[in-house]
Image 1 (cartoon, rainbow, N blue to C red):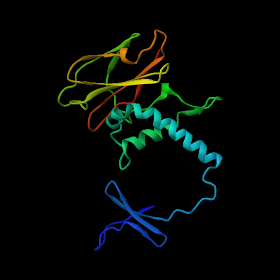
Image 2: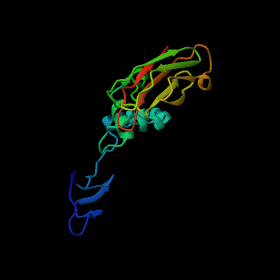
Image 3: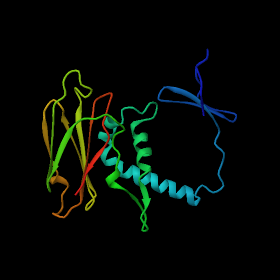
Image 4: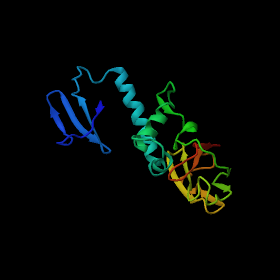
Length: 201
């Protein structure tokens, strides 16, 4: 695929011979016409599609926080960046494909923000020092998400960093005392984010 600058006639879209022109996120590009595949369901293709479907199905629960967490993706959408990051954590468990939920990635940041979570059976209490005007995360938010492996229920939680604490109730996704619930959190502003941290049982 190649990008090109618009000429006097502007970009073109559609097929011209063996060349296809289009645009994505405001970037005009051209590519060669895709060749027909005799067997579009080879073992490798089926495995790749299965991995992609598993990751997309899981991340759909957290779409709203993914958009906030992936802030430095360039021309790639936050959703695509999240899919790519989490494909690395899909393994064959012997009984089928499984996504390592302890390694779930909901943010692409590398910046640091000091935050302390205290998890109980039914809630997670977060505490932090509110950022000042000149701080990187001033005006930012705490984003948290929880996933219950016992019933596949998920939830998201958002709190302003202008406060100094927040409590996230897990009651809406609990089905029993022995539920295995993972809680993921990160801090993000419009220009920066921290890595995703997992707090499990």
